[in-house]
Length: 135
Image (cartoon, rainbow, N blue to C red; front, side, top):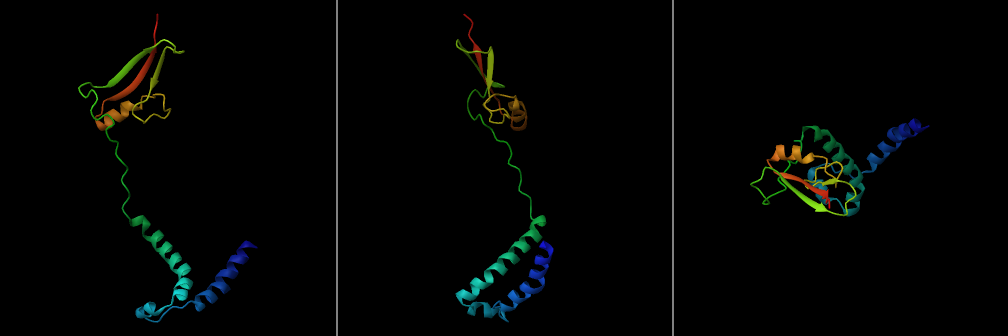
């Protein structure tokens, strides 16, 4: 049923549609088309533009992946890795590490993604470590 409908559209309706289009005989004829004639041509021109783009797309240059960039631009640049520890009395667990490189798959908790980031970029960012303060 579906293939019959598609077949009918391609064999009968498409040629009838193409015959009714106001295609000029010369390039100069396009300048003489009226607004309504241009509007009738728009669907065909859109499909042709799409097909042209899909044809040349494999040959277009690929977009380069965005390279990681530095996150820490000026804080403690003399240290190999910036890690801050804060003691908090009301912490339930002994240690909690929070991500500051924005690369963690478990954000906001650190998963040590900063190690790969630092190797790629030469950055020195590290986690924020909250420690339970012992009295």
